[in-house]
Amino acid sequence: MSSAAAVDVVPVLCGERWQTLDAARTTDVYNPSTGQVIARTPLATSAETAEVVETAAAALPSWSETPVVERARVMFRYRMLMEQHFEELTALVTREHGKTLAEARAEVNRGVEMVEFAAGIPSLLMGDALPNIAPGVDAEVVKHPVGVCVGITPYNFPNMVPLWMFPVAITCGNTFVLKPSEKVPLSAVRLGELLLEAGLPPGVFNIVHGDKECVDTLLSHPKVAAVSFVGSTPIAKYIYETGTAHGKRVQSAGGAKNHLIVMPDADMDQTVKQLAASAYGCAGQRCMAGSLTVAVGGAADPVVNGLVDYAGSLRVGPSDGNEDVDMGPVIRDEHRQRVAEYLDIATGEGATVPLDGRRGFAGDGFLLGPSVVDQVKPGMRVAKEEIFGPVLSVARVDSLDDALAMGADCEFGNGAVIFTRSGYAAREFKQHFNAGMIGVNVGVPAPMAWLPFTGWNRSFFGDLHIQGTESIQFYTRQKVTLTRWPQEHESHHDPVWKSGQR
Figure 1 (cartoon, rainbow, N blue to C red):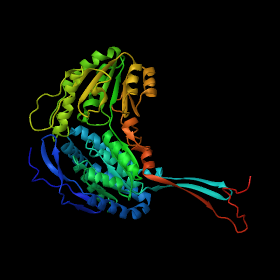
Figure 2 (figure 1 turned 45 degrees about the vertical axis):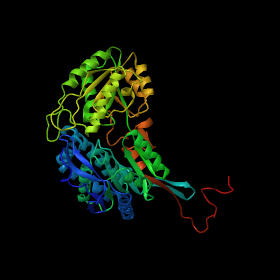
Figure 3 (figure 1 turned 180 degrees about the vertical axis):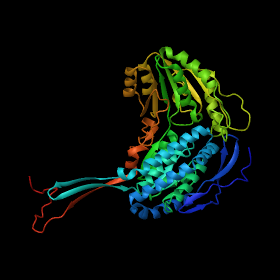
Figure 4 (figure 1 turned 90 degrees about the vertical axis):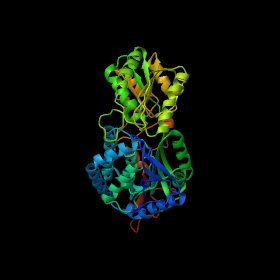
């Protein structure tokens, strides 16, 4: 691996100023395809973090009073710039994360969809009115911004997940502080540059980098009103509990253990391809990745044999600048080792590994091939824990009821899928499976921008989810106004409460 001495320190955005912190602490940013250090992320102090929050707070009064149509026009211009720089944004995701170029394009597309959704917010911010709710009294409900909002985002979607948050937040009239993952800060910086180019006023959008010291400052700062988080379940729980303890509105999305149910009547050829795409897409590093296949009855052997053949043929290699791979590297070498250890854990608990991804790869990239683990039982760690890598476990059960029971015992609740030709089985699954996002013959049931990302159980902490109209509810608060214009001779009695009257 190359030395970090010759690489740039990633800047922070505070108002209109891109600043390079004189940070005592930094962390390396790697290109996962090569293992080389490509940048260093500064870890901001509490004081540096607070300065960014104060900048966002100073910009709030003017921005919140900016007409919503003007705020939306920034998003229209922003979308145009993202389209113009689409391949650049795609290449940046691949360079710092390791996704294949095809996967990176899909990610950026999903981000663009969120900007499109935000551009349509004026019609969704309309209030309600009810004239003459009492004699001579008119009522109205109007949405207002909540204030300074914070986004704390993970490494696995450096472009899309920040775009889940700040386009909606700022178009609703809030100002925003983004704390991206220190592992993948470069996409966030480029998104910020384009946002300023789109005409966003200084201070409305800001970027700070850091670790727990930075995060704790954001969670406790009195001028932060709302916090959005995506990451692992333990951290999601910490963010929610800490943020709410300090009076913040918090939406905190955590990890997952997504079940893929395969019925005996499923189209096995198509099902195997969808299972592989779900489990090995983005090298398994996504909270909607299929992690546990539950094969019902006679589906088990065809599923396992098909997966071994198909996944074993996937081309694994460096993804940066290379279109000829089906799966790229994982984010770090230590993460590769952690994921690979689960194969030993599985065999130690009595499972088998008919496809082992720990084959040798040339170069210094963080490559790990797809693996299949068979004969998995409900109590095994590979059946319960989020692995977050290209490992697909297979459990064998006798009936759909058994598959539903496995889901009921899962602590997570992000997504689940059934592959079947049976309308009855699909309906039972939709009705009863213990997860918030359901797919029927769809490998990754991740909702698009117009729908909420509805994780259940320990996959989500909070009340209002990310994306869709729930995100508008999260980033706004409602004010009810009752108005009366009495004539001089009218009674002084309150027409709403009607004191003493029946």
